[in-house]
Image 1: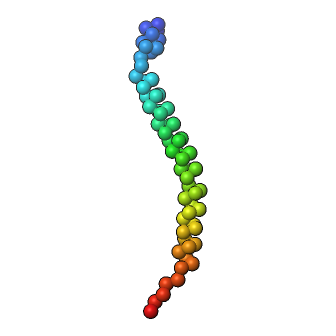
Image 2: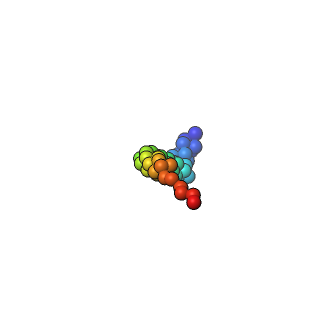
Image 3: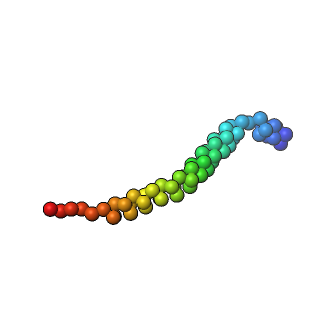
Length: 61
């Protein structure tokens, strides 16, 4: 049992996996935060553009 515990504490393969999981979670979290910050402004501009285009008239001769 002592050898198993010693081997487990010296093994580093799992540590790399944990690092990648943490980095991926951080990237996903930052992406969600950026999308949340930008989406309101983009929706405001899109609705303003839609209102402007709806108010335009087309002349057919």
